[in-house]
Structures are given as C-alpha cells and as structure tokens.
View 1: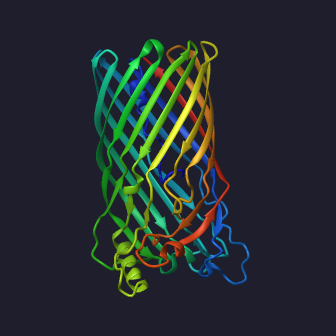
View 2: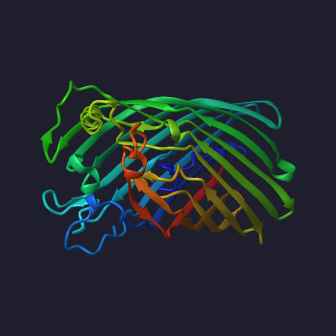
View 3: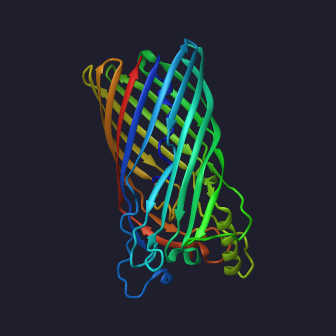
Length: 395
C-alpha cells in the first residue's frame, strides 16, 4: 500500500548466489490505515451523523517467494524464481456516515482485492569470471474484485467487478558484476510490463451491467527497474542498498461497462462538452523507492542487519483505493547459520505511511473546478509493521 500495489520488490538477488542455491520466504504485513471524509463536501454529509472517520480500512496479508539457482557450468547458470509481485487487500468498514460504505442497501463498504503470482525462468551467461548476463521469460497470473460503495461514488454506488484469473507472459533481463573477495556485488535488472486481457463480470447490486457489447479489459502490470549494490566495509561488516523504479503512471484499470457508464456520467455532468469518461483506478506518478542497510557478522553462526527505507508513493491526491503516499521505514533482522551452507533469518520493519488527500476518478477531467471537487477524504498518521522469515541452503 506504499505505492499502488507494489508488494514483493521483484528481487533477483537469489539468482546471484554462488553455486547451487535454494531459498524460501514468507512475509506478512499488519497495516493501520484510516482517515475521514473531507468536510468541504456537503454532498458527503448525512444529517444526524457526527462520526465521519473510516476506521481501519487495510487488511492483514501474507505473501510468499521461493528461488532455485543451479550453476550448470562455470559460465552457465539457470534459475527459477516465484513471487507475488503486486497485490492489494482493502476494505472500508460499514459506517453510518455512508461516505465510503452503503449502510442502506448492500450494507457493505468499498473494497478491493488483487492477487498476482509470477514465475520467472532465468538463464545466466558468465563470459568473464566476475560478469553475469541474464534474461528469461516471466509467466504471470492476475485476478481480483472491486466493489464501490458510498456517497463518494454517487451513481456508481453499488458497482461490482470480478476480474477472472488471466495468465500472460513478459520477460526480464539484466547484468551483474561481482568481486567475491570483498563481497562486492552490483546488479541492474529490468522487468517488462505484462499485458493481460481479462474477462470482467460487472454488475450494480447484483443486476448485470450491459451498456455495451462485452469485451475483455486490458490491464498491464508495470515495468520496473531494480539496482542492487553491496560491498564489505570491514571483514565482518557489509553495506547494502537497493533502488527501485516502477512505472505506475501508465497503469490504468477501466473495465468495459464501467467505462461506458463513466462516459454517460461525464457527458451529463459537462452537458456534452466532455464525453471521455474516467478510469476505475489509475495513478499520477511513478514510484521510486530506496533501502540502505548495514549487516554485521558477530560469530560464525550469528549475524544481524539494520536498514532504513523510503518510498515516494504515487502522488497526492491519491486514489480512494490506495490512500497512502509512500513511507519512511526502519528494519531489523537476525540470521542464524547452524552450518556454513544453510541459514534461517527473520526480521521486522516499521513503516511511517505518508499523509494524503484522496480523490475520486474524475480528478483529471477537463472541466472547471473538477480537480478540487474530486477530493473526498484525508488520511493521516498511519503506519504498518512488516514481518519476514527466510530459509536458505547452498548445495
């Protein structure tokens, strides 16, 4: 929830481990995200109601990753990486204020759930001892559902969309340079966007929405670039960092029937001067994030790490379906090596989530006053705690 639906970080570092290697990890997050209806919107106010808070809208969630790397020959390596790169799980509680929920008819709150899974096959070629070129296909699935509820959605209150699971293929490529004697490693990895064409079932409070002919909805998960770096600064101390860019600015969700309905709404709103409609969800800016950390080996069995992270978020105002603006974070981890060739590690990270004003999907319409009128809520002083557990084995 720091920036759009970025979740795993799409790390390729397991593939750069020496020799044959396997790892598996589980991560969990406990976010607390709440806000309140913007007081300048009289159309979002119910008479006789004083509480316009949302309560906590974010759900606890878990995701998993695993990697297998085989050094087939001194100059040839092969890897399989599984992760869940993008996801979202948000639920506005039912509230009498009716701003982001519907206490009268459906008795439900606005919600979104998105799940992706990614399997990458990677072939690496080492033309020189310390240089690695790698590339391969990425097989990805995506599914989800969205429900819009509350006064903020006006005539779209009651809209539901079920995105049936779709599979598509993209690719990744990169290069790395390593000096094992000083634990130096630098890697640049590009992940392509992946284009999905999804069957979407749309309805309004259970009544099928069929304004135009059925067509598949195109959703492209974003392209991204990761820059990883590490080096020893003493015999027992390692400095490491990661910089990540994700192209969320080109990410758009506009299901077929929703698009037709939004076109009718904007045509009416503008008296025919604008008929282009608006998106179910999109983002204003690309995401940048960075992590810098120090790892210390205390004994042959025990080591620890400390890191600081920052995430830019994807703009302010933000979407109702992603009401945060980046974060600052601080993490601690411990690693135990029972034997030199395998380990178990665990850690946690605390996130200070950025304050943001939320808006509905009409914010960019070329109509006077729309940008200000589309603002619907304020979300402030939010946080999250993340936990992780990993096992790794060299063989």
